[in-house]
Length: 385
Image 1: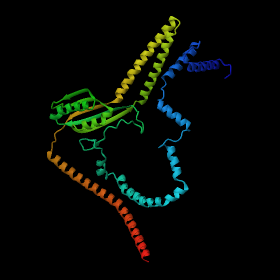
Image 2: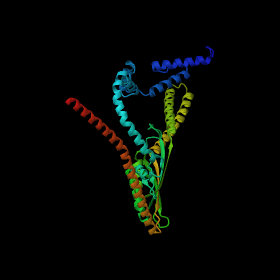
Image 3: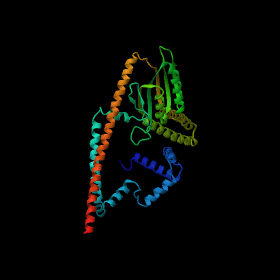
Image 4: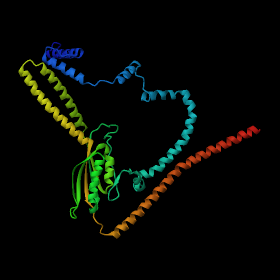
């Protein structure tokens, strides 16, 4: 592009006008377009966050010191490691490192070999699987554990600012004469955890007994609330889903900030309007921007409600009477025998693992005691001689 290109001259003029406005704090350029850019630059600078005085002072101190590594940082750890790995210090630490390796290597091998059968054997998970279920987990009618809802820490590791919209479906089963009591307790649990009942229906008739409840529960109270709801009756099933709406939230927030900055600029332009036609055009644009701001505010409120409160749908079903009590008793006895066998197998596995770890340690300790005894005897013999 030529040096005398009109577009280049316009860009240079606008950049110079912006620099003058930032230096003087006022927008006084004679050209309306350049003055509008000056006003926008001043509005953006006014909206920019100011650093805390403590942080600014600390940053200035670190700049003057040449940014030394902070205590506990990776740079400080590297410097400490280089100091420890100096040739002289490393030679002095070799005997101790050899003794530690002599103890740890057999221990690691034994623990690894003891843990490998459980990882590859799905059948051995009967005892271990039951122990892996969290105490807060519910169980369905078949005795299977139902995992509680995930915490609100976010979908990505280390990301605690994600906006997640959660939906939980829960089916509870209770006898017909207990439906009213369970329904009342569902409402009580919801209120106790800071939520509210959006809609509910209940029927206690013999043919169409059951109920449906749509609840809103705060995200930070979702786990204990689900635990208490699952304890009210038998859990037949539980489903959960989540949708990440972080992008929608960030987009709406950025658009709202831009619309507010534009409104401030329009208000300043309205004060400086020279003609009625220019003022009317600015007012029309202000109405459009104000409507956009109101819409974005409503969108952000809706997103906050959907992410701060989880949707929990509870379906209350009437329990079916067992047709064959004898078969039920026989099934319960078989389940008890199976559980007892799983418990014995798990106990035996624990004992074997303990022995696998303890025996090498005992051998190493005995070898050390024997060497010490031989050295003590030789010292006594040399003293007597």
